[in-house]
Image 1 (cartoon, rainbow, N blue to C red):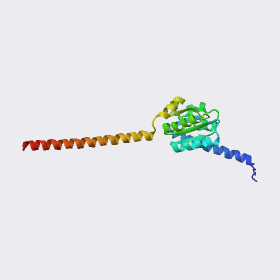
Image 2 (tube, rainbow, N blue to C red):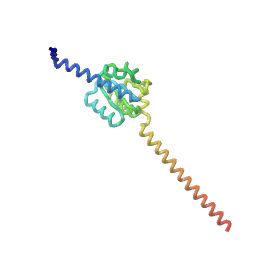
Image 3 (cartoon, one colour):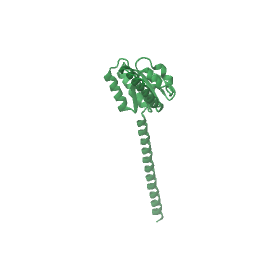
Image 4 (spheres, rainbow, N blue to C red):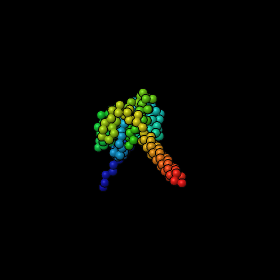
Length: 186
């Protein structure tokens, strides 16, 4: 006859929590592997509404993700990524923002840090290169990818307009020269 086991709710809860944590680490690791940029910040002193506001700002103004998670879980998630050298930054209440667009992510978070003294950028990484706070502030001053694209399109359109203008001017000049030559012969 087989044995019957009775598990208390607390034991089942531990198994469920462990599975949820493992799933979080797995998904977060996958997200980080497909990201080029990670920024780490201390959010000590921010209330829930301020963190929600920041999360919305990050979501609406950049193609980034923002998370507040336990340091132990984040440290596990970054183990085999380009960001493993940032492990030392995960002390105290930390949050992370990650994306493939370091400029727009930096812009949003640097602006938020200026407006909220309790939010402090600790550092970050782009690829496997560690970035200082100053590096991140410099990234925030660069034009965004959309701004660069708009400038390129503007340059292309301006050059095409100039080219068409030159062609039409030259055609008009050629017609005038031929007309003058023809008139002078008659």
